[in-house]
Every structure is written in structure tokens, then in C-alpha cells.
Image (cartoon, rainbow, N blue to C red; front, side, top):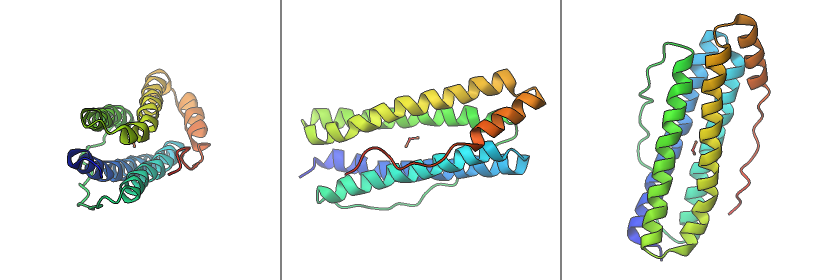
Length: 170
Ligand code: FEO
């Protein structure tokens, strides 16, 4: 039996991950409209990863015979005007998600729920990678965003990102 607080937080996290997917689809659409299809692709793939994250939480709850509740997903609230806006908002969002994962970890720790702590270890590492990726994109845009040729090359690079399933299998 999962601790109730831990189970509740895991359920909330499903919604947060699906919101992340929705937010990144919003970003992807913004770049598509700007003609930056590489950036659009990067966030499209990111959205797929976020859906995977949600499904890992679903599966973990199901494996532990805990109820799964799907709540409404919020409308992406970030207003996008400049090319930097999605990148800066993406970094901020990942930092927020890291805080959420750590809060679940803390609840699991307090409940001496070692199984959930081990499950969350993958997400703690993943969040580190996601923050690094988001921060790298901000830096690259700061450096190259003002130069059309460099922006074209950066867009081409991001267009090469392909989806791969998460390394964590439940
Ligand atoms: Fe599922 Fe980007 O954190």
C-alpha cells in the first residue's frame, strides 16, 4: 500500500507531466509559425517525452494498486512574443518540475517508502538533464539568435532531434 500523501502527489504529477507536454506543443506551434521548424521539432519531441513521463507515473500507481485520477489539463499560460520566450519559459518550467519531483521524493522519504524513492531516482536524474538541455538552448539563442546564418544552422541542428522511448521501463 502506498502512503496516501505519496499516492496523491504521484497522481498530481501525472497531470503536471501532461501539462508539460501541452506547454511544449504550444512552444512547438509558436516556432512553426515563425518558420523555425527545427525548434518546432525539438519541442514536439520534448512533448512526446513528457507524455512518456506521465505514463510512467500511471504505470507505477497501477503496479502498486493505487487509483489513478485524470484531472483537467490547464491551458498553456505562457505568452510568446520573442524567439527567446519559449526557451526561457521552458527552463523556468523544468526548474519548477524539478521542485515537484523533489517534493514527492521528500514525502516518500518521510513515509520510509523506499520503493517510490527508487522509482523517483530516474526522474531526479532526468530533471538534471532536462534543466541542462533547457539552459543550453537559452545560451545558444543568446549567442546566435541575432545572426540569421547561425540561427539557420541552430534550427537545422534542432531539427535532427528524434524521439526515443525512456530508458526507465516499469
Ligand atoms: Fe517531465 Fe520535462 O519533465
